[in-house]
Image (cartoon, rainbow, N blue to C red; front, top):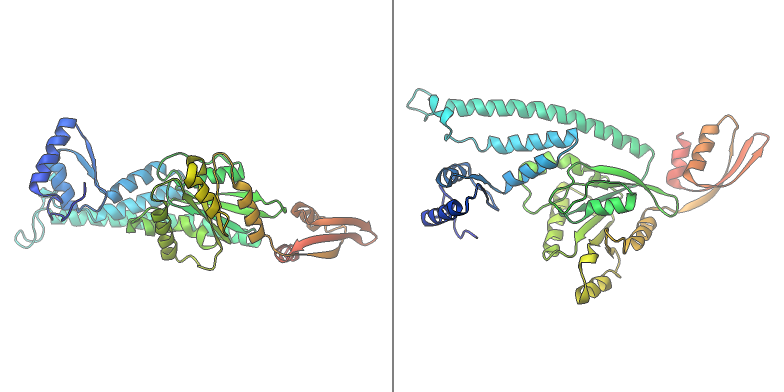
Length: 372
């Protein structure tokens, strides 16, 4: 149901509160979800009136995030976001808050001193979490710096939650990342190397799913998990093309990418996933649209349409190659082995001074070789 005008104390009007309360009691409902913001006072009053647990949109998302987080960074980010949310919801409603009186007994109401103490405790905990998170983020930055030296192009998967990013990630990498039909199955960024047909290695990064009206606490707390997108060489925007609100979801993803400061110059492909769930006229229309540039209809489940995407990624990321002949001394076996590992060697002929090696490589690979 939609609310035309919110009532300050109870969100709904008194009649509707009573009506809903009777229905909840009759159906023995224990949890109520409100798709939107609910103030602390409204939550307190409704929970008291209905005798149920009530969660608003932000509270529900935090509950889901807490259940999905697996790595240390993910857990810390969830805790930080939850504390930020809880801090705004301290109200003079709890029994233990009535035991103290703020000020001199006539300036403040009952419980204000305890609320301030609760806020200080939350602030102290948030400071500790931020310090721990900074250490984790620094470690991630070191990993990124190491990858820049390799350097392999980074391909970031982004998209609305439950669009099938992890299924596509698994299909392309052979990994076994959790991929289920549920919201926010992926919270912690996962990376794997993928070898393109030309031999070029790229790093594929699976990211947290986006959602409309992302709570401000989560935008701040989960920015680190999306930093891979900021440094990506190519972005794959995965859409659930079978979803009735696919276009609206795509717009939400675009808005969030813009708010994160993603460079509009980064190449982006639209991957229209879940083609296996569409048939008839709609399927034909999707396939016709997919013949245009940068749109790739496919099914991560069946594998249909993966090949054209891989081909386009290769064309976008694989650089121009040039042929060069090098003389690699015998004692420089490590650099010679690296050339073979990269798959760029065309001929390797031993001579008096070492090996004459003919390579076909990119400017990126040459710079890496010079730095060895």
